[in-house]
Length: 225
Length: 263
Image: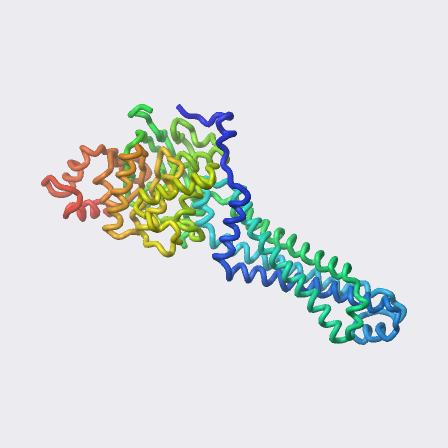
């Protein structure tokens, strides 16, 4: 007579190796390319906005650090809310609010897109569970997928935002803005924007992934497609 | 393993669902014993509780009262890990809608349960190819599900169900979405597997073609087991309903049996 004894259970645990789950996640993204693109684009837009604003500040700080009042006046004309003696542009509350709002909208967008993705895949999830997948496998797959999307999206977004900001300044203020620029500051801004994007993507997928993972296989199979 | 071993034992199982404010009793006390290696068909009109019973046996759903034992293990006592273990190793599922995972090739679909079971990749691929050859899909490993016909998809599903050498294969209307010929091919493939590998096959079905190969037919009606017929009794009891002549279930009596089921 068979009974799942504790000792037997240990060497017979159900597993999903990490590389295999990465493989499956990448495959899912490729197959549902269009949907992934939409999710990624929303992330790219939000992150590039964040990156753009921060890199703009960096460039402006670089210009101010020359101490030349011409630049300061130019910046004020451009729209920066600073006094003539200012040494850095800082960031005004208004700007911060816009950034926070854009990121919030982006997260809601991701939750929405991922919930759709989960609904679309009820059957697949149910099948996997029938084949012996644990809740954690499903969670892992969705998190990985969102992580990959987040990584691609934030990287593209942060890079694009930074490049656009620098281009914008070098056209308006001339090459001087490139010379006075602190590249390490720019790099930091871009990195922060990328990281924020990745984290947002993971936060956005948390709830949909939990919904998917906790689903009972019968319920999942009952859904007509 | 003795011949008369009970692989599935269902005792006094009831199941109620909440439908709005009403409690609907889908199963009203089912007792059933299934022996290892048999080919069982669960028959009954839709709404009879057939699928509910089927889900219980598959460990996909838990009974409201009563107990379901699979291989003498009460499935209500199992935690999530053990249940997953059971689904992975002990039971193979075949569905009416095939449920091949769309993003994976035929071979990847077959190797997935083996990956879950912790089998190394190269061994899994070798065995997957073997299984696909066995179901007659030797040249279609790399095909995606949408490049396969319904019958071929169901063959992949059968290969997948066999991946971890389960003791039971649960087939939920395996021929429901297939045409007559393909359905017959799938049925004879299942029968062959049950004979060759000693797998217990339990299928919920409307398909009269199934009766021909079943060792035992369980008729469910209104949440209860109406009757259980062994194969040798089968032709007689169907004969009573249909014509008096001795018959196979392939010809005109089939229609009568269908009528009987619908009524």
